[in-house]
Length: 496
Ligand code: SAM
Image 1 (tube, rainbow, N blue to C red):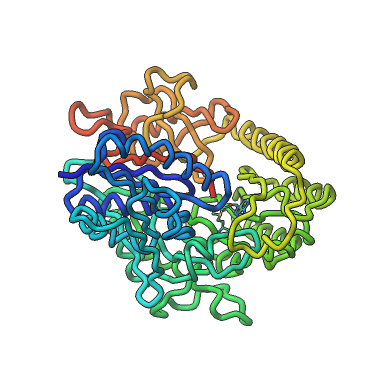
Image 2: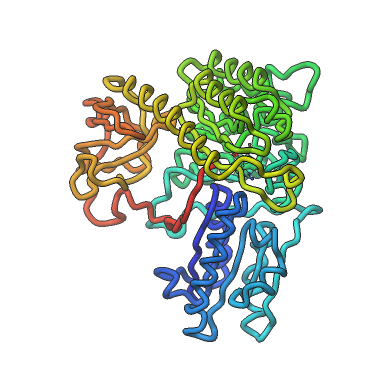
């Protein structure tokens, strides 16, 4: 049986697309190799949102030319956003590549590999499924004996109709297409029945969701002048009602334009929505926001997020920010820093502006030097690290609920031989649980008390009540903390 390996670059959408490629290939009779070196088919699932990510693909393909030469029948596949962006050009530029496949063409991958094995020529398939959008579902569990990962992604929409001037996503992922709410609910119900506790709804602009079948009622709180604004809130309400066993329902990435009154009300009323939202703002300067074509002002962003925090006391916000966008002055950047302080973000992904093909901002000169971009990014992180440190140390001595996602990956936090468990609080803080190595905590929502704050995470201990409620680790069977569901090799996850 041919063996495959997938290497993933980029965001959660790519991680999820890789899961679907695993499924498609396994169903076609491929087995997973121990690593790229052992593979007959190697898939590089790529990101092109910043130039650096695209360069990584090019150097990786250069490195793999030797791997290809070692055996004539080895196949190199390039998938994801660079595949979609470059298409056939990739085959011409890099002879080591055999197949280029876009995100919407993942189901065709086994057929393309089959044609190649019969002597077909290298091929690029990058056609958007505009007429009949397909949403592949990754199966929750590969075998009855295995344990399902406590967290899972579920796609609700794909593509993007925003036209942010810096962003290549509308080009690489196409226009917005939405998945019927019945299918979304059915997938989540199946995941929860198999043991999943937390689902993250995925979409490029996830909160612009609209049900293609029009099956959702208008959500409470919808503003009278925009009756369509409530579809995403209605979807959240339907999931909460129809899948009561779900412990947590997150979503990413939302756009501030669609942070509507009905969505705020859903956050206030649905216990399944955790008290954390990632809401990309990109800049704190109205002048820059206008040039980015974000279609909101700083004041609107502040008002909408404030409404959310007022509706859900204790809710925290994180964000994405680009520094050094064309024409960004020191005053513009100072406005971004002051916004970070004003909103009090508890997490932040910061990026240096990077010129991307096919984007409107290409018309603007990239006039902020690399040095200035680097210096602004450092100041931005300094600000956000200080906010996070103050937030985390304020949690010491409190009690929190943690969804245990697996064994602690970070050694050296006091655990012995990786015996710590780790997970996330409802506000998405990472918590390492000490002194519970003998217990089977995978997938449990446990009560912990916070003992210490680390730089980016919390050190916690089970409360007595939690310790009494969970079962000891079983001998044999699947090792706790290692979900039998494959863990994908994620390279260069850049957040957002
Ligand atoms: N759809 C989301 C939105 O715009 O709200 C974000 C998706 S994007 C894959 C993740 C982040 O990458 C963006 O929020 C932005 O901060 C950053 N990004 C996108 N294009 C960029 C560019 N040309 N240069 C630097 N950062 C960029």
